[in-house]
Amino acid sequence: MVTCEECKAKCCRYIAIETDEPDCLDDWDQIKWLLMHEGVSVYLDNEGDWVVEVITNCKNLDENNKCKIYDTRPDLCQDHDVETCVMNGEGKVEKILFKTAEDVDKYLKKTGLDKTLPAESPDDE
Ligand code: SF4
Ligand code: SF4
Image (cartoon, rainbow, N blue to C red; front, side, top):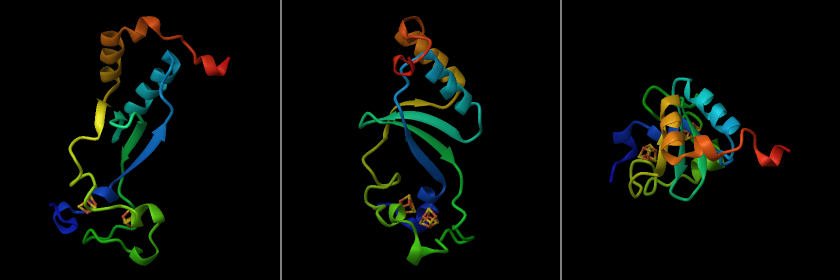
């Protein structure tokens, strides 16, 4: 198992935010825009959730990769389990991963969604 000392605090160097499943071309256009920014990726995980990930260091990380506010760190950090973290979990969490706007274009073309999806979400009407 990888220890926290060995991995240099990988879990403190990104944020991951769940987002709605894209159901129209407008949503995919927004995803393409997100992906035009450095450090951003979007993926569908193995549990069926859509996630926006941004590589960014937590401000509480010190130069030795330790948490400066360890005793008062957020619950989210306290609940984080080294045995199931990104370094030690069971393989890839991403079922489909988009790193660039081109990845999105290729996916939409390959799946035919570029022809079948509505321009705007039916929920917006
Ligand atoms: S919990 Fe996992 S990802 Fe986070 S510092 Fe420890 S080994 Fe690295
Ligand atoms: S608060 Fe501490 S444990 Fe939580 S992400 Fe930041 S450095 Fe890591």
